[in-house]
Amino acid sequence: MSKVAHFTYDTCGVGNRIFQYVYARLWCEDNGYQLSHTGIPELNIPGDDFGGVNNIYKPQIFLQDYNLYSDHLNRIKSWDCFDKVEDVNEDDLVIHLRAGNRFLAKNALYSATANILEDALSKIKFNKLHIVTNLKKHDRWTAGDIQDAMEYLKEHGGDGEPPEIYRSTYPFLSVDESLEYTNSFIELFAKYDVEWVSGSIQEDFNYMRKFKKILFPRSTFSWWAAATGVADEVYVYGPWAPHKAKSKGSLGETNYKGWKTWG
Image (cartoon, rainbow, N blue to C red; front, side, top):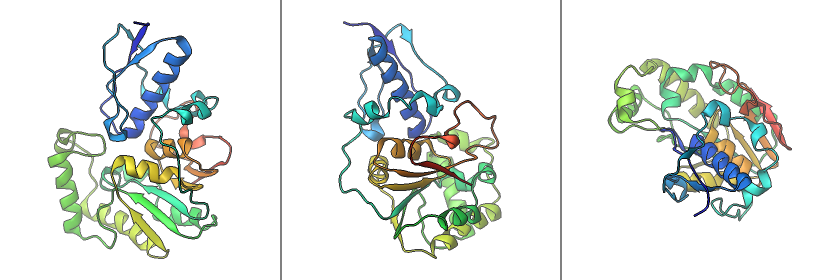
C-alpha cells in the first residue's frame, strides 16, 4: 500500500466538508499519498477509511481561503465526484437561499437583508429567478410556522448541527424578529417570476452548477457549486461573516474570473 494520509471531517454542513475533502485530496495528489476519509454521503462522495497515522486535518479558518484553490480549479472540476454539467442555463439567475437556522437565529442579524438583496438584483440582467432553498414555505409565514420550524430543529437538528445544539443555549431570534425577517424575503421574491427548487442536497448542488449566473449569501455550499460549475457571472456576498474575525483569503473577496461582490 502507498503512503496513507487520513482526514477526519468536522461535524458541520456539506459545504464545509467539501472544503475539507478538496484540500485533503489536493494535498494527497501533490504529495504522493493515498487519502483515507469517511466520505460525504450527501454528495455521493464515497469514503475509503482505512486509518493512517498521518493526519492532515486543517481547521475551517485555514481551509476557507480562496487562494488555496485558485490554481487548481480545472483539476478539481475534472474529478468524477463532481458530475458533468448538462443543460446549461444561460439567461436566468439562480440564488441559493439558505434558510433553516439562518432565518431563525441571531446570525441573521449579520446576514444580508431583503433590501440589500433587492439592490443587488436590480443591477443584474436576467430573465427568470430560480431560488434553491430549504425554506419549506414559499408564501407568507405565520408565528406558528416559525415556532414549528424552531421546534423541528430542537427535535431533529439541521444545517449540520445535531438537535442537542438547538436544545441548549442556541441563540434563536424572537419569534417576531424571525417572522419579520423571513417574510421580508417572501415579499421580495413575489416581485419576480420565480421557480422554487428544493430537492435533495445533491440535486440542489448540481442544479446550481448548471447556471451561468449565480448569486448567493454566506454559504460554503453554494460557493462550491459556483466554483465547480459553469458560472461565468458569480455574485458572492462581500461582507461574508462580518461578526467574525476576518481571515486570509475571505470567501467574500474571491477574485476568480467573473466573480463579483454584492452587499
